Image (cartoon, rainbow, N blue to C red; front, top):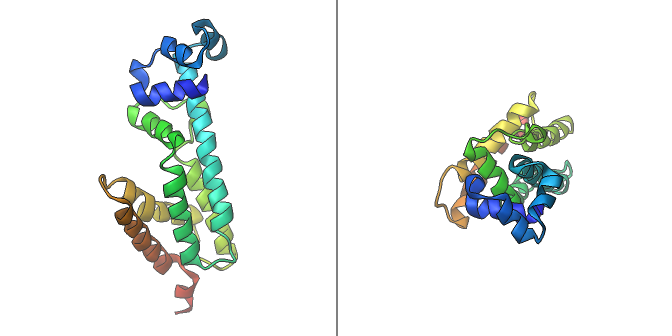
Length: 188
């Protein structure tokens, strides 16, 4: 039912999606949908919760595998941004979350920190990098915000960029971040 609901919300938007259409696509009765989710808002909240959890899991996995203290900082940050761009930002989970955030609908209680959780994951990783002397960041949360602004936000806020242009934004953003926060700068 959640897969059918996600499909309908993505194709038709929240307002035009009906519980009848979700039930039909899922091959269940409308009553079954209501029994599991109470109403369309409950169904939407469950879809958003599922998508949010999948996104957070993807970001966490990418951070665990790419943002390690034993890697070159520039290489690690570029691998992380590229992985998020190709595996996470192009997913249907991201599309659902983006639709929610852009719709002006209230965020379900379970997803209240939806926009901030990935950034907190990055901040936590930056704290580890700072503790290991890989970056200089007295405030890892602010470093995370700077990194996100220099990479993902610049790329996402410039519509119509092709893959090469997005990658150029990432390369330039990582370069600026490393020049500002890299531990080598402290030695200079």
